[in-house]
Length: 82
Image 1 (cartoon, helix red, strand yellow):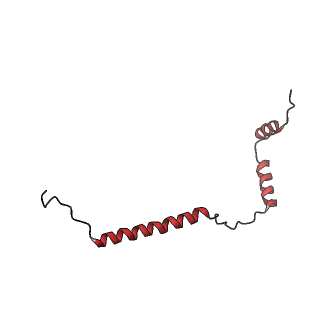
Image 2 (cartoon, rainbow, N blue to C red):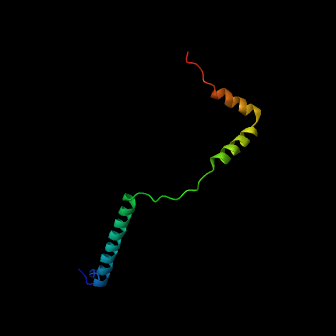
Image 3 (cartoon, rainbow, N blue to C red):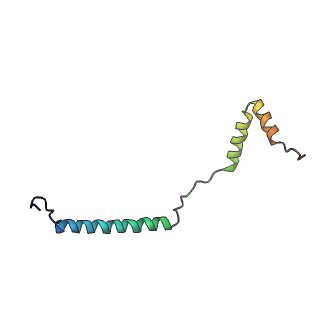
């Protein structure tokens, strides 16, 4: 073989960088594993006033066209099994 075609061994500094990268990957893997095994963080939710929610729904229902209200009432009727 020619001396030109020989491959030079990697520098020791680069090998250290590879090891450091492997350690970083191991730390990241541990972090991801910990995140996946732990329960999700709960967010504090705001309290919703049910009375105003019902009142708003009633107002929207009153504004609904007559035909849609009739169709909804017919669909809600329970039919006997024959």
